Image (cartoon, rainbow, N blue to C red; front, side, top):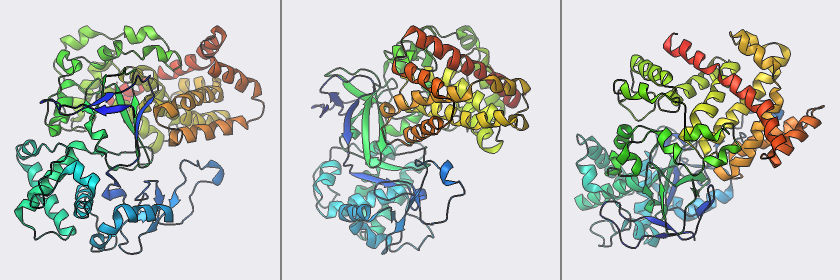
Length: 554
């Protein structure tokens, strides 16, 4: 429901998905609860349940955190290894039974060959092995998706493989690696003696996985894996997508990024679409097509894309409610246009691949142009934030950087205020305020923050009220961004519960609740401006100085 496949594949784009109804921004277009494949990657195979993908641990050692300070969203489940292969683990008998029935009974004998804890099966190899074993059992869903392995039938699957593209890609290393993976999949499946035709068929399956599977990355719990659904795989790419995908356990949810009208094609981005055109096209090479969306044709930067976004009015309820800034961002285009071309990095990571000097030059240029939302500047700021939060314990600096990202970067790269990356940014601010508030109260904040002015500003600020207001934004947008079960939403609700227990804050909480219920009222907007936005802007004002001192040596 909500989608249909296009009936005739186009030569350049293949099949696609079309909306069968009109979907407002943030709404769920379709849910995909029965994937063809869903498994953790090899690095995480013993840290998540192999069926539901909930994080966990094989050990039962108590956490160092006190029960009162441990979030329910962060509590790990106890995992138990499969008693036969001792390779995969499960959080419950229910999950173990479901996995056994679906596929594990087929792969368990092969996984038994692996030395306990010594090494793991590469994710593509295990994924291909599962498909091969199910195909041997005449699994109709697998056969419809990938077709027959050569020598055993002539049925064509619906998934594209782009075999020739992979064969001719680069210097041949990718094709050679696919050959090694195919040999491993055949060996583990007990089919190693079935000849060259079978090996070529498995390489075709691996090409299908590379082309159609989703990287089920969950940065909130540090897990990753592969997800394949034959219907969801039909979604075509655009660098200006109208939809995005989130994962809830074994389920994928396709959500509208903006309003999608009935009959309109639903498009997602296969890559990080905040990159430059050259970097986006480089990242798309393994998909073997050159994007011809309007952003690529006109070489629009993210500010220009943002200017035409239909979701800008929703930002009236956000940390950047000045809608004029979205339409007319105060960047110096002359500085951008008259500068030398920006160097292209060597990797797809936003900050790796540059020399330190190249990174400094790029960031200096973007700072001078006030083009704060153009990469790699947001990634540099984020990395600096994480360093101050985790390594230096300088929560004041981390908070300033988080406020800057939430007001000067994320709104322009992700104009819809419910996008997951923006909601995570809000949650980061709230979590940092929960650290700085008690340190300010005891006078200990200055021990880790050398900026006395920033420390003083925080001491004069009602940090608890700002934190509560930001958490209200998280709880408002989180279920739309992802789901009610999202770890970010669960943690936000717990922090709100903790704030509700503080004595003497009944009046402040009532005012914040009234604002959250009717943010458009003049008195509510005035409250938000004075109590929340002004302090957030002041904190953000320290960020450029922090970056210049630490990265540029200014």
